[in-house]
Length: 138
Image (cartoon, rainbow, N blue to C red; front, side, top):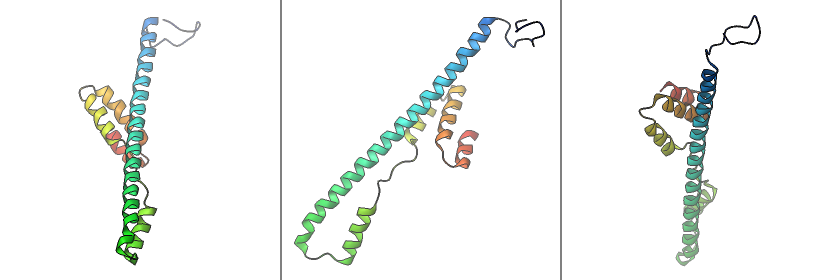
């Protein structure tokens, strides 16, 4: 029995190698979870970048349309309201990296532990507690 002194409680591990294996397994889980969270963050960043680029292109098109609009005379109130709405519109940024989530789950389809870690990482990104619970319930 391994322990720290005469009256120590018995160890859960019979050999020092068992404790080392458990430590390595914990580190492995931590690394897999960190990798899944990093992939989700990168996927979200890519989605936000694409949304910002699309918004920039939309606004460039609107500016080009406005530049040629003078040919047709004065703007109507409808045109002015549409332009004000275009100017006020923010890019439609994704809140979640859905493609990355699907890929993580498909990569872990046969490995239950990897799937559980992917679901934990996905639940961490959910702002709504009910949505996080729904992800964890899978």
